[in-house]
Length: 432
Ligand SMILES: C[C@H]1O[C@@H](n2cnc3c(N)ncnc32)[C@H](O)[C@@H]1O
Ligand SMILES: [Zn+2]
Image 1 (tube, rainbow, N blue to C red):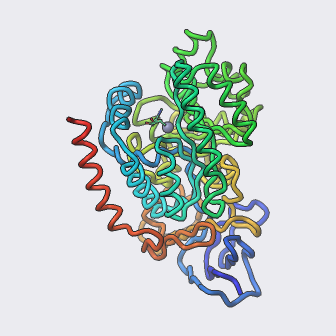
Image 2 (cartoon, helix red, strand yellow):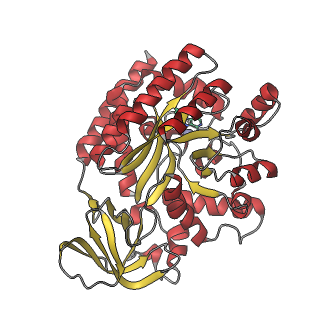
């Protein structure tokens, strides 16, 4: 007997061999999708009638700092350097285990509510982040954000911390948690340190998550110090490969785009964060036509200011269209691919499609609403008309984390109460 059968659903499989199914079933057993479309199986522990709903793969947020929900709305309307150095980093220095744990739980609630089933995170106090992810039921690729600023003692300590985290948590939480190395960026980490991180990641067979060319200031810094941009600099030290997840990638030349595509680097496009910090417009249409694996991420809540991947999809499409003055770039189906299939590939997880043998990471979107009516083209609706609040059911690894808008895995009220308490205490510590 199956664990879950979802029936009477419009199934947006994202599987190119199968396409959409007008009214079909999805069968789940032991955390895995065992059938899609039709089934001889009619009994299950749990039957979900998804009439007037769209069943699709959960969205994959490939660049997040989940604990930064703590700083949602805390420092807005300024450029990256001032925002990080004068506000966020001093605030993070005051945050403790309890704060990051509580902030991450709020992020998980927000993601589950808005249809994200997996995310890549780079942050601090990562044991607490991992613990929160484990409890939430979500899937995540976690990394400790390492910075050395050219200080060799700090480099040793940071790499030690990063390595311990990678080794301790990889494969934990029934395999829902995987780990990566997280060197912060080419302008905050030294050349030697980046070389050491790459070697260590190769030894540990782990991926690398890094910010790259988010701002023009980084481009100027790299040119001044190394006579080349970050993309060429990282090529020079053999850093690039399909194991790397590069966030932002805004300030790219055509040559940079070729390098990223050739080395099969995974790119996380963080359109809303880049717009809010006025960092710039990433050449996403060009990256995609060069064959690069472009995915979507929200970045942290202090530069977005939410974790709604539906907003991210719509904004990504619209900004590329207007910035290239070409309405045909990033059509809805391609944007959906970025948020599902491409994201799963970047995280090396077997999710992102509704297909036999894939992880049962699935969401159901409630279509019986004025803003989704009528429904000619479901992909169009998911990108241009829907938002995170339309997600009514979220399943990760075959477990229901939210059903009919009701969170089933976490105690939402107590997490929100805790956030009130810790954020108040944190701000009073920062201000004293
Ligand atoms: C892992 C580290 O990355 C920082 N961080 C958060 N958002 C950004 C961003 N847009 N660019 C660079 N660093 C960022 C966090 O504040 C943390 O210190
Ligand atoms: Zn970031």
